[in-house]
Image (cartoon, rainbow, N blue to C red):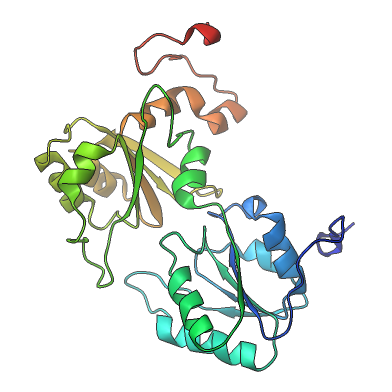
Length: 284
């Protein structure tokens, strides 16, 4: 069996009809994290419009499809959002079976909602195929659970820049600092200094653990563990670059135990109680 011979058991898989656009989440990077519905979409498409953070390995599953790159990266020449949306409309009106393949989940800081809204406004039918978002899957690959009952009962997902590329002033950083045990920041590396200061000024401990995960879930993944007051300096010191997901809070400490990629390399953890609270009775 080759990569393109995959079939799906059962008769209930949705059909991608001509003139439709399916917005499909490709996951955070590892092509194995694409969902089966996402794979089903790729196998039916005759045109795929894909983003910068989509693994090109996924395109090999759709040899029948025309592929169109529409990546957007901060500070680099990029496709304009309006042009992407208009291209999707034109392709659908031409009777094509269109897959809009977006990194992570289309509806989590991916402008999928904007694209879907524009398509519907122009009479184009859509289907949403969710994907694994980097703020959960990317951190999991680094051994960081965004929730853990000994650590947090809340988690807040925020974007690190606004539509103009600046640190978002509309966010109530003081409320976030006080109200969320764990904070996950998308696209926040450029403004981590301003964000860290805002959180510390609002009462967040300067020593709060921070993890920065770049190119998460791929073979190029890097993880930096630091603290809120040192994050900006440490990022510059080791030359980390986006794309990155940032986690702030004690959940980062769980990486001492749950770094499963290190275990796969033969490195078993030595600190089994990174929180210093004593293991739950059922784990002793």
